[in-house]
Image (tube, rainbow, N blue to C red; front, side, top):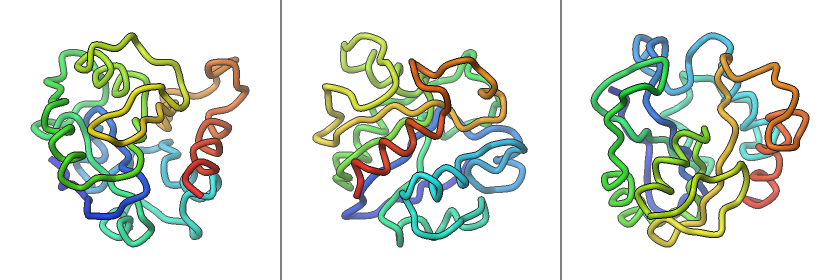
Length: 168
């Protein structure tokens, strides 16, 4: 659905479950209404400038990459998706990023299950994927907001900022 934006020497590859319907229609990652991915990248200090979905092809210039666990369809929920963790593992092995940052617990859970690990909490994990450290972020989707707590943190941005500190 959306092309990978990957390359050698990346600090982190951000991996979601599948492109949402709005993102697929617009042809850019995290382009749905209310999705705060691009805002969080900047506010967390992961990139030095504010970016928008149309900038997704430029992210490698900031040391980050983009991919999804599902490359064959778009869907705005996670039910019944054909996750392909082995394909992600092959991409990570080929490009050797320092980190894989899953942009939802569901994405991180699929990788953990494939590796025989328990369902992860948010944050840095004690396991790796093809040599890359793993961080599980709360989803930036507009559908995942307004909760009382995100694994003990008041906001999603707090988790993104923690990753930003680890990437600096």
